[in-house]
Image 1 (cartoon, rainbow, N blue to C red):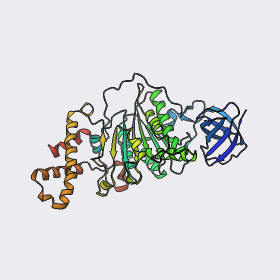
Image 2 (cartoon, one colour; image 1 turned 135 degrees about the vertical axis):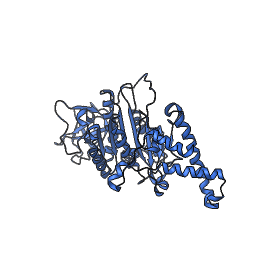
Image 3 (tube, one colour; image 1 turned 30 degrees about the horizontal axis):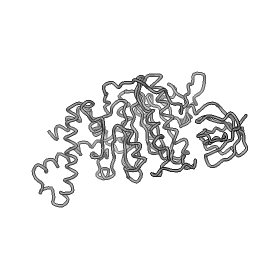
Image 4 (cartoon, helix red, strand yellow; image 1 turned 45 degrees about the vertical axis):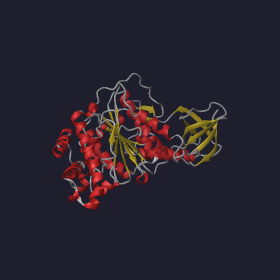
Length: 434
């Protein structure tokens, strides 16, 4: 016996099922002649299903019948998705053919993969990015997570595009990109960059731009993750996963919590923020079948890096690259704040003794440079001791050394991009401080 819609409020539809109630995360179909689908968010006593209007479909009203489908949201997976752009529901956005036919494969995005047991990580494998400041301060290690943190307009998307361009070009594995609540312009620029550099053949893109409803914006990262899981577990591939922007995922979940009348936590975010972030991040992991190495941008509202939403995401990262507006205003690109940028992977076991010892000396010089700036502003550089003056000059050279031109910006500014091997980066630093 079908259920019946009892209320329609914005994107939330309540349906009454007297028997055979649907499961959580199941799609139910409204019997309105158009096959409109709703996603069951949760169930309440008395057989009431709280459903989400995934496609913002307005062709439904109170009293309409609702039937179970016994299926969740299924997206296409496999080789046919490579080189394509999909939305959160698996529909193509590139104007090419839909995914159907006897050979099409689909996967439920909300069905968690089997938990890995007794999986031991082999010796850390460093992937070269060609970007000095990343290769030196936050080594890009296979199977781990890097967060790029910064406010609006400081270069998060450009740095992500450069990483995709440099790392994907090495043929290290398949690349997945999840555009979460960002501008369509950025998605289009990335698509054209990948196309012009012949990288689409190894890339799959999922996109839900900022004008989409919060349901799709909250699902697109999960859809991209589910597709990446398939290639990791079934095809035994190593995956490079790029997400722009993870804070928009938290924002979308927050909007959903509001329309579901949930009481916010003390930080003003949805009550389930920790589990929302944790479940998604735990799926971006490696196992005995393959690895998922992820780069995730994290927008900082009002440049407040202590924002609870930003902090929750940061805690899941192995490395944090902080982009600063003050650094950007000095014309330094990428605008990395060298004092706030940290990595738990910058250890002798991962990068070797040479790299580690250099990093310790560089960080000491940069910290001394910051403390001396205030003194110099008052008494001038000439009043410093010879040792302080020498360290200050070395720090200035180091900051200039970490500045480089991005390949993905060449068409816009006409300046050729730079690519530095890790060995070149270490040598350039040794020439300054040794």
